[in-house]
Length: 333
Ligand code: NCD
Image 1 (cartoon, rainbow, N blue to C red):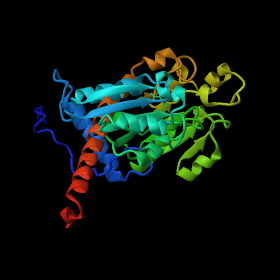
Image 2: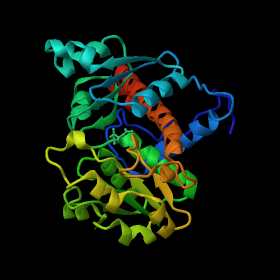
Image 3: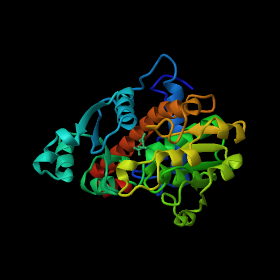
């Protein structure tokens, strides 16, 4: 592939959505476009040339109402790699503490000619509400326990990159499924691409109801382990829990932590993934997290490419929408 940005145009016309809010509503074509574009961006910026100024003159804004390390840095860096200006907004140091609603805050930021807003919020559906009130594109960077579409995409991209195909693989999401937006986005994306998905954890965190989404429910990691091609180890999200879901962290680790003993009983080419932050010794032991099967840092690298793809595609769709509104209905005929 050419590294000249003038010639670099993967799938610009197959994407028409102004917003990326979830993986549930994406078609298989849209999902594939996002993944292919992310791969193309990764290849194009892999060498010594890091920048691809396709969004020069555009502005993106990170509106984070919840803590974040990887996602926020990655969206900021993705915008910069594409040549966009980017502004950061942190809820705790904003006028929200003076009583302003988040829609008013967002509209004020949009009034500064922002093209794409990236939002993380503790309330499920908050980015969808925002998208109804602004003209700029909106990207969901995690809404409560609902979805985290770019995390799902980067997880899938890492699986596809390492294994070539997602179809036919058995992927287990292990841990706090009840509170995980990463789990939901993975389930939607992986199922559309033909993977067999297992959700596994203590019954207080994994309900039988998940079967309705076409996934297998399991309570014993040891019993499913020999069948798994990929394990995605999810953090126990104590900050979202109102009661303790198990007697002790030690007991959880005994039953569900991926450790050397379990690695010895897993497939030889098993992939070990985690969205991060990881809690060493709880869902994964350090030797496994840092071991040869772990692709945890590859996930972070791919996150940058996925976010470049997401920003570029929604910004392009928003431009097309605005142009057609400016031209009026006659232009459509
Ligand atoms: C995830 C999140 O915030 O939902 N992390 C992330 O975005 N890298 C998962 C988590 O916090 O455990």
